[in-house]
Image 1 (cartoon, helix red, strand yellow):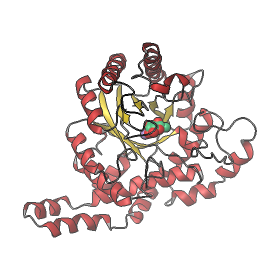
Image 2 (image 1 turned 45 degrees about the horizontal axis):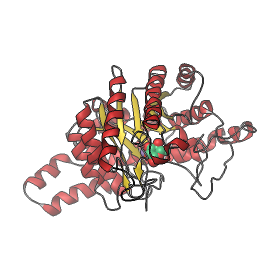
Image 3 (image 1 turned 135 degrees about the vertical axis):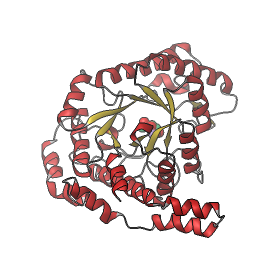
Image 4 (image 1 turned 90 degrees about the horizontal axis):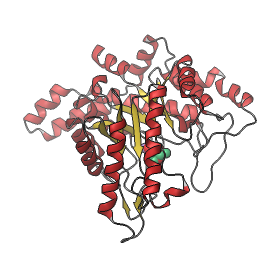
Length: 385
Ligand code: RM4
Ligand code: MN
């Protein structure tokens, strides 16, 4: 139990700045009270999630949504709040120039502009002390014949190589894949194999990030996790859950068993060891639920799945597996999944001086009432700002 607790204490879950702003679907963005109006206020909300869970000490930024004049000052503000700046997420999907793609666009001018943005994100890493750049490309085509699929791979490789060369000591980038949307026929980085092949060619500072909402229905995500980890290419996760497409719902809400299976492969592959460098990030939107508690719940869901994964009796499992005891092995696995780890996690929090239930503690803190009263006027931050 001491080992399990130590592993849980060492796990860090990164929350995304964009989860604290208003978000919605293409039909409607519902404004909520107390929503941050700038990146400084987003960090203040993220600090609340860390204050009550004790395991969310970093916050991912999205550029240009979190553009500020002085990034060193933003990093200082974060430190004062007790958090740090995590991954810098690039954004080459919201400019009119990117209608036909960003780094894979047929126009050399647009490709230059997109790559320059990625390089600017590395400058922001330098200024904030962030060690991770996350690259997601919406690039792709909607119609057969629209562009040359192979040439687009060449253009992608060229841009990635330039960004890779710009990375400093201790910096890396994570390449994210997504099956479809907004491109509907052929996406340029649609799956882990494409991301992996580009990363292998580039070198050790390029790794793959698995966004749990970015696969075809029924995909065995834990297999991908096991494979990438074995190859030293699992850079991290964008956690969220989905019922149908890229729903960006709270992780562990749609399928807690899948989250457990993923976390088991992480544990099995040594990915929980901080040395492994696997970033446990959330990439979610809270369209109808309050945002700060939505993040707290999500952090807790990952922590619960991790605790269950750590509880798997690996010796008993290995014995059953080597004997070909199919039902025995499955029973060992399911025993851990069916264990209620909430008392263990409450105990862990109390040992660290935290309230046993972060949800109740936050609700009682009065923070929501305070921000709802204070944050009036100005423009609320939202998806796209
Ligand atoms: C994308 C992808 C990226 C995220 C944006 C907001 O679908 O998941 O990680 O930065 O959405
Ligand atoms: Mn993502």
